[in-house]
Image (cartoon, helix red, strand yellow):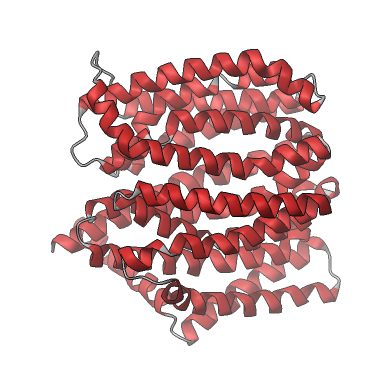
Amino acid sequence: MENQTAKSKILLSLLWKLMERGGTQGIQFVVQIVLARILVPNDYGIISLITIFITIANVFIQSGFNTALIQKKDANETDFSSVFYLSLLVTSLLYVILFFNSPSIANFYGIPQLIPVLRILSITLFFGAFNSIQNAIVSKRMEFKKLFFSSLGAILISGTVGIILAYAGFGVWALVLQQLTNQFSVTLILWFTVKWRPRLIFSFKRVRGLFSYGWKLLLSSLIDTLYMNLRSLIIGKMYSAAMLGFYNRGDQFPQLIVSNINGSIQSVMLPALASEQNNRRRVKEMVRRSIVTSSFIVFPMMMGLAVVGESLVKILLTDKWLPCVPFLQVFCLSYALWPIHTANLQAINALGRSDIFLKLEIVKKIMGITVLVISMFYGVYAIAMGMLISGIISSFINAYPNLKLLNYSYREQWKDIFPSLVLSLIMGFITYNVKLFHMTACATLIIQVCIGGVIYIGMARIFKIECFVYLLNTVKDMFKNRKGVIR
């Protein structure tokens, strides 16, 4: 009975997390489409460069301690308040650094406009410091319903602001003010919905305790963030802001899907796994379920998106964005591996082995940078292909520790996801051939999506794929429980 209650809580939390990420980013997706049709690739290239530096700064504010608070079972008000004040101090220092170094960054890229944009957009760091604790509390209590409403309200407000300013001819500043409005709105809504306020207490002892666990995650996150953005830094320097805009636009579509689905599952899984960290057998079962379920959903979506990419870009973004299609297709293959990456890493974090997590990041980044250095001499598309190659190798590296920690080998993991992979490949091959009929982009897209969905679900049902049956039974159980509550 206790396991059933825990399962229901996890599923309900997952539902709200999916709604928070899927619903809000779905609206964000629509907003971005409207903005992309109005603005030019160069505007997005400028924002992409600025976002790199802000993202790196955010690592120091929101990584490490945030996860440490979730992982620590007995975290109390002293822990939360101490981390809050430390985050504010770090944020202030980082803002000063970015403010005074913005001219140097602008000179490096030869884009004077970067100076005011970086100085204004860096204000979002303070909003991140304010809501990082609320996010940790929400995750720890698995109250993802509150994140749903805060994110939904923020995207509706900021999206409206961004579109109005874009139509008014504000150019890149429409994107800047949209992001500022979004972060401010999230912070404001969470302030009223999450019943937590910082107290005038600070404990160096508590901070040191959290730091002993969190510094490895912080360093791991910093290495990962620098590595993930290194390609954009190189493209922005070696090519142009417009080419960087195409590169990042190609990343947007698959990243949106995977971050919503797989990211939602993993956000819920970390606190769930942490609560079972003393039961390795149970942790293995949960990690396996996470990998199998994520792959069953993510694989067909990535394969389908790669196939319909050209038609989708033509319809949604217009022909001016067609150079982003090859990037989109490569990123789809790369993001398809995320279920294996994240589930294995979350298990390692939940077991408190941040030392292993850090070692993995160092090994992967050395390998990845080596691939990047080689690929950068062969053009911008080779850089994207290098990321795919690094992702494949990293999936082996991330899974390796769990052979010892959970007795869950890489071979066993691939055996679990193999049925979903085969169905996705068959579905992708059939839907790709719809192009041979040379119909309009809209007709081609509609037919490909319909045929792809029918083929994948139909084959899963015919061959009684384990994950498909599990998902059907889970949905049926949720409806039965809901009806029982109503009665």
